[in-house]
Length: 367
Ligand SMILES: Cc1ncc(COP(=O)(O)O)c(C=O)c1O
Image (tube, rainbow, N blue to C red; front, side, top):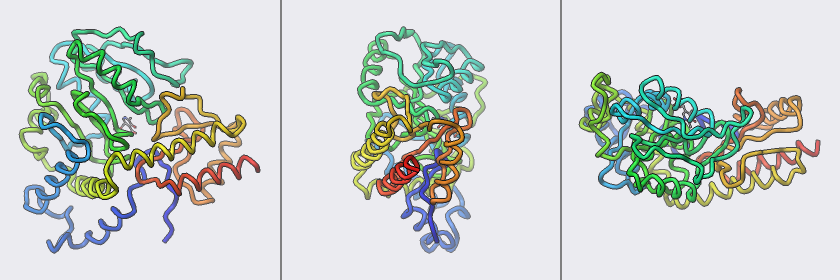
């Protein structure tokens, strides 16, 4: 068996040890005589799985007691609608656009209620920066302030200094921060208390697609618009332990194994140190390539998780994709909307895999 060096943006590489354990438990989950996906979501076996997953996630992120953890479906895209349905409460929300995903979130919210664009960093179809905090004109009455803390397509990430500045500016007016963290949740430690709501599609650092995580402060529950479908009201999901209907049991089980894998590796501080080093090496190789490889994102907001870069022309990029695939790499083609190359460096991508990519990039450049 050969496992490819997987740099996909999502669904993405999962830890080898997690897949191995899932394979061992697939036909007979811990003596149950069936796989976990064949057992009732209300039975003892699955209750243990979801409870352990929540407890481990709470421990990893040090989630304060006044936050609920919800295991939902519909992907992050449904959150773009579910957030305004639950939190607008007839008011208006502020949206910051820093890439494709926050743009989609803004458009969806505007379909549902009042969404105000605070700033967009789009510049000739490109997104390469975060706006200066001093330039942001917040609505002090906003129901919430929405942003995407890691733009998966453009490789723009909100790092901690910026996050703190934003939080401090909004805290004065008690406007809750709401973030789409799909592509960097669990890549580093996080102060959950800075947010009113955090959500993420699972298919990057969490587990298989089909599961969506929501971490929400309790005081934001119970504000859903009256016509919100039962299943989409966070309050109902919180009151029912995410078991209002049949949840994605297998995806929750795998996410639980990923949480245990993270804990065994020393938690988020330890994984962050590796992630930082992986990103440092790749950006250094790009910047040191004499302009052959280019990433134009401002250094202060370069993503540790998704590194888009270009080559001198489209023909070379096509050759890069083809030859990298022949060399055992997958997932390096850039998103179809922006082209180029993109390397995603999620938790399950090892430092060794990144070094192998750097070697390939160097060989390719030298021809
Ligand atoms: C930051 C971000 N937000 C939202 C989405 C959409 O997520 P989903 O496909 O789970 O709806 C993605 C998908 O890659 C993403 O990276």
